[in-house]
Each structure stands twice: as structure tokens, then as C-alpha cells.
Image (tube, rainbow, N blue to C red):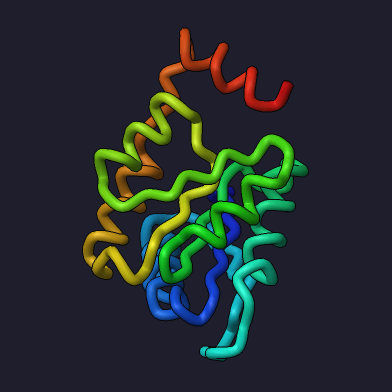
Length: 145
């Protein structure tokens, strides 16, 4: 069985989300698209960040992906949930560090500041980078205390 990954966006991230969902399928993952299903300029980012963060927080899935214009609203919302480490990422290098050092379990992409190609490159790096553990494990554990 392939890994399920919850994915959500607001109107600003809608187009990028569509590409991310297709890419996840292509890579053999099972994306669970929490919406929106159609572009709605009046939608609100918490409506899509919450189901993704909740699923990761409760252990329904190990990882999630969110996107909105600047990525800030999604990351603020997701990081309110226990055990969620949502990383706002704008480059493959930051994606790698978010996984290696912080064990980020939610990727947040700023759709207005990364191209589609950059977003896909970031996604790939984030999916394939493993957590280093060691001294970083101690630090991650302190987050939830």
C-alpha cells in the first residue's frame, strides 16, 4: 500500500495543489485532496489547513502538504496542532533542512513565491529526505513538551 498524504490549498494555492496532487500520484503516493475541489476566490485557508493538520496530528497519515499565497496562514494554522511540524519552504535546500533537522511532517509552499517547477522540485526533495535524528531528535521532542 502506498503512503497516503493529505493535501490542501486555498484559492491562491489551488493551481499548484492540482500539480502537487498529480505529481504525488505519479510518484506512487496516495494523495487525499481535502480541497478545494474548484477555484473559489472567497475561500479561507483554515478550512483546508485544519483537516490536513488534524490528520497528521492524530496519526491518520504521517505527512501532509499545504499551499497558499505566502504560506503563512497555512503554517500558522497547521502548527497549532499537537505533533505537527509544518515548514514553510521556498527552496529545495530549506526542504532538505526541514526534514533532516526538524522532521517536518507538513510541507507548506508559498504559491505566489515559487514557480510550479520549483514547487515540484521542493516536493521531491522533501519527500526523499530522511530525518537525521541524533541531536535533532532531542530538539524535536522538546517542541511538544
